[in-house]
Image (tube, rainbow, N blue to C red; front, side, top):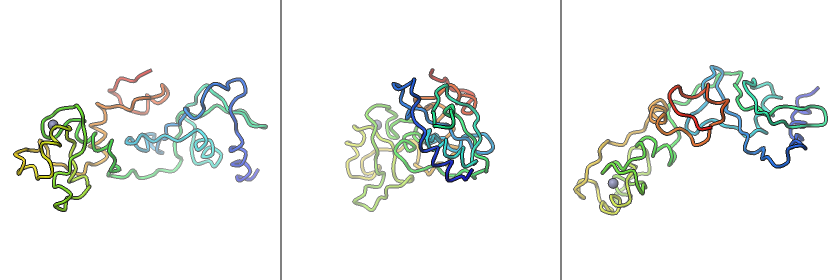
Length: 202
Ligand SMILES: [Zn+2]
């Protein structure tokens, strides 16, 4: 059978008739690299089930674990994969994406001026009006009161001090911080592939 036909078939998979209430959209597959480590932690590499099934038909991934839930096509019943592994190794990027979440994670969800974990926002260390850029090196997590107090000034001018100079973290550094802040939802079949030392929610 031609691959194109298989892919087309994958697209025609539909929700199991006996299970119309459940939302298949909520069955993402954890994607592992060929060495069986997560392809990415932040964000956690998850694919929608449709993408995962397509990749299976394209023989790009192996199924490591599955949900109980099934999808049906006219010719095939298939359990939805919950963990898949790439057949070809992808070199992980050394640096994580510059996202709000990752920035909070770098700063361990604490204000870099006073250490508070409440009302967090972002501060341009060198204000934008003075040419400060929106970059890893110039954005720090700050609580709203500190942000207000600092105003449009440099920390020194405001009599404030950063606890840690902002840097562009490596993926590894972010992973270390991430152990304290695991993703909110983790399927039980993912636990073997993530961290040793975090509590997993059921
Ligand atoms: Zn603060």
